[in-house]
Image 1 (cartoon, rainbow, N blue to C red):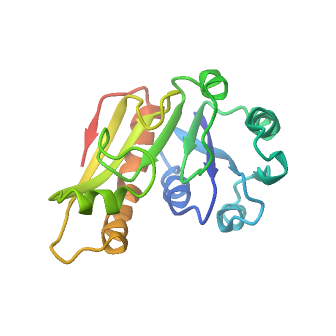
Image 2: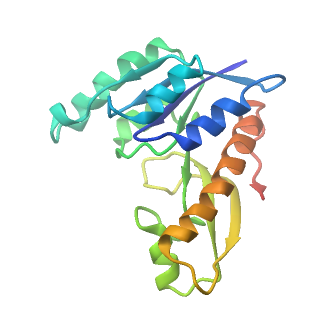
Length: 195
């Protein structure tokens, strides 16, 4: 049984879909939900589901990412995770941190990578006149949003879409894709899944 730690920064909707999926014959179980924001609503939601939680506020560390990550490692290593899922974790991790968990850390990104790494993905898709958008689950590497792709889900871009309406439709697919990829990954299957 794989032990999964989930890192969040906000409400944790993707975390909730991951936790809800890890039941029955699923090859993994959630052992920690960790946030860089002690007030993140996702922490309360995880606790209500019986998942251990922890928070390391990034703000006192100012620009010292190494010190923040050293603090982040305390609860993370104590949970002994086999897999780490970034689910709306809005801090960029250093290459040293990522290397420690290389091949065991997943992220979900709201675009069809390699298109639109970084932020404002939905507006960028609209500005480019794209006819489809979507989300990608990938392994985390030191290069932002550039690790091996494990799965993608696509949605059409509609003529009257705004960044918000497009984001809402993509989020529905994120909640389908991430749990499906995690199940496969925890089973040792790293082949790509397209929904």
